[in-house]
Image (tube, rainbow, N blue to C red; front, side, top):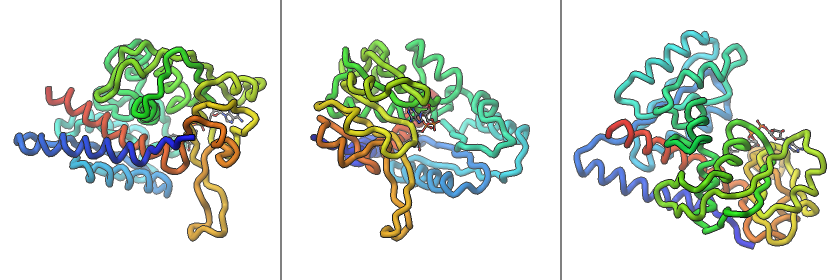
Length: 302
Ligand code: NAD
């Protein structure tokens, strides 16, 4: 069994990005600038945003945190999105989710200029990705694909089972891995991407264990600790655990620890490859946001 070390791969990619940014500076060019809109004071969102800003600083990007009050109206938030769309100093921006209940997330996301949509969540970017047009791919699916590619795990002709059908993970990762491999990204070998046979499962799927036992690669993004058990995994499978769940742990100084959706102790001995949680998909998601920002910068400054 080999651990897919997202932390290590993300560090390698950050070093590559840093070298590219150093070269830009030396050439007298400006560096990429990412805007991060955060609405209200959700502690988890505050942590995610702080991590994204830190990641930007580590590679030499500029980051602008735009903090808005929880009671901001949808109209005022839309005005902020339009302002960022028009701001020539911003190459890309994200609106940290979730938004307060009185604001419609899809209205806000749809208003983002797809060329600055470095979360890859606008209908334009999703549609362009589906059609194989140049697009910004959402961060977690991009990170999963990159992790597979950097470990030379081929997906062509393999059966990939995706558990979860969200717009940010399940649907886009399924679509990416079944694509013809013409959407190659810098640093990736096109032959290692896409061309998989993909099955998407969700909470209404019948006999999930039987479907999982036919998989070469299982990607779990359900938010349900221990969902993937040893009886669902045949020997030699690759398992990508996207889940991030807090479970109580009085022995931890924080009172909780993070686990994924996989029963790791029982499943990992069966796998060829498996991601740990933490340290697998999570670091790849953040570094993919940086790669998306650089991609938007290059388009913006062409
Ligand atoms: P979500 O919460 O929007 O949806 C969960 C999906 O899982 C649904 O489609 C549901 O049908 C399916 N599901 C739930 N229980 C199931 C079951 N028992 N059997 C089959 N399907 C089931 O999903 P999300 O936003 O994609 O998040 C999923 C998990 O991934 C969460 O734990 C989240 O925190 C985590 N996540 C991690 C990263 C990362 O960078 N590592 C990024 C995004 C999300």
